[in-house]
Length: 309
Image (cartoon, rainbow, N blue to C red; front, top):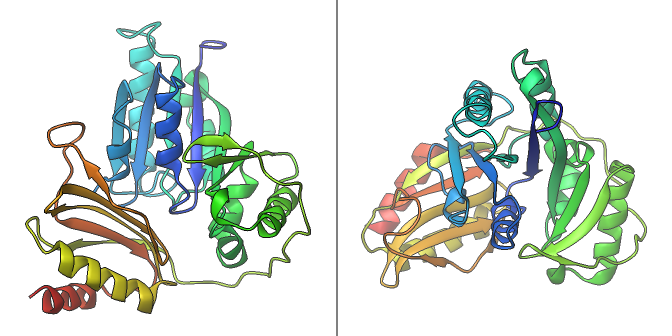
């Protein structure tokens, strides 16, 4: 507590930047051990919190982005945490970490909290961390106004997954981020572990942006039992055909190996992670969330129904 206010770290970044993976490593290293972790999911089916079993205190805010429709729930949760920190949990909490949805603007969240008459007296934003996916950030910064707004709001920018990018391209990305936000420190991290970045190169020329269809989450029920082979083939075909529109896929499905945490960013599908049975939060199995634009939810469901059958 500083000046009677509880510190808040805002962790942001575009869809698939690796926020939960980065935060999981920090928890493993003992950082934020005495922090209350808030995880915001724009979709109604929370998934990212499954990676944060090491958090001592964890609250999930699902079903709305914290910078817009989910803001009232965020304010209510933060007020409750502040009440506990000055009451029954006095001295037990060092601060709060808010992992935002990939659709959130951290700057808008910070401004909204500062405008709240209660939280302005009880909470202070200590740092805004924004993660940038090395594999996809150049394209995102060129096409997505939100990706630029996130980078511009950061106190510290962390480039994730740098090992998958040639050094020359990585140097150009570092320079582009520095041009967007000259005041932010820029670091690298692979699976949450700090790594060195090359010296900045020539920045990319970012075009002026025109309006684009909004990015929205969509739920698809694929069934809790079996069907893993059919789902993997269908999803591969979907991403091949619509990878530019389907920005992010995540969910928990049942396979012969057990519960699998399934995630993808654009056309890149991450290796599924086996979730231990009976440990950590209980996810909704058999539902995947597709986040993107120009998605017809009914057409998507009919496609899966035909293929799965």
